[in-house]
Image 1: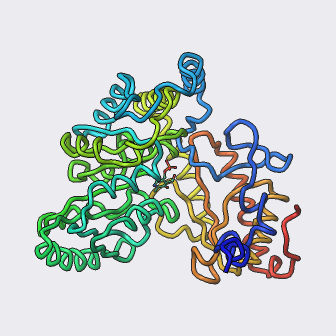
Image 2 (image 1 turned 180 degrees about the vertical axis):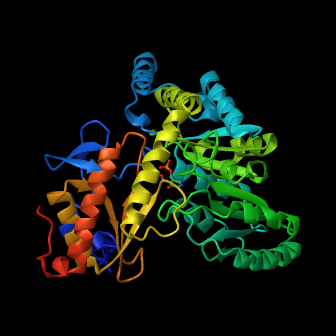
Length: 414
Ligand SMILES: Cc1ncc(COP(=O)(O)O)c(C=O)c1O
């Protein structure tokens, strides 16, 4: 078969819906300043879809820092990969600030989270090593582990008894191969909002010899007393051997970092292929991220406000009998019962008649018959936004339960 013929026949699990979803459910365009109220298809909508947790995206000091750095450096400097020609004092200074904040000996800046963590996994794992990881880990971890030539054991999401069983098997195997064991999980799981049971995994260190890596993309800046993340929140920060986060969520930017012991980071600097063979981040990202980190550290009121909005939204929805699953973080999943067509009509109603924009997750990401709306509260939302949303959700639940969405004609108003 011709390769292009194959692509035309099978568009993939998401691509198969593109003919009616594109521009509305997939690839929607939210325009205007990044804020709770944005423009969708020419109309203002109340937006609950952006991981701008602390509201930093449009903070005046952030915008000023981004602009100043761009005026001073443009987007080119530094040129080349860091190892060859693209290093700078400012990058090293930023790394030192990150290490100080997450209380690790050293840090390496990464161009992007996805490719960064894939490549970190690739760098630290040899064929002899064994990996034990949570089944709900983000695609970047799964893809990183695809490159691992040795054995890996997956345990069902947050099932620590099964994690221990995997560790027993991994220990036996590693004894034979002479390799080490890496456990990988997340701080906050971005779909369900529940926390990785990092404290319970850490407790297993008493019985088994392994190193622990966590991806704290959604926990960095939102969890813990100082905002240093989920392990700080659970009181086990020191026991996390490798700490990773992206700047794409609470920092509202681009880039990522990995922190650990000095010699581990030194190893990573010389072995992480996605950084060795790619241009370093332009200086506006470095300086812009530095400003964001400063605000994250010096303005705890941003995190307090995020949590005030989170509690108002989650408590309000729970009081109206919505099922929010096991979330313990700002990520707010709302589980409903219905088929994909009902979900489609419900989201159209929510967007067109209540002016609320949030994401719908349907089968196969959640089981058949389950619909999940995912809301991301931020420090920029107001209590009025929360009230408006809870009111709209009550209405759409009534309609869903009365069969209204099953009857309506399907199709986005495109
Ligand atoms: C858990 C998790 N890890 C990693 C990433 C990838 O980070 P980036 O957007 O910086 O590539 C994401 C998504 O942004 C994420 O949700």
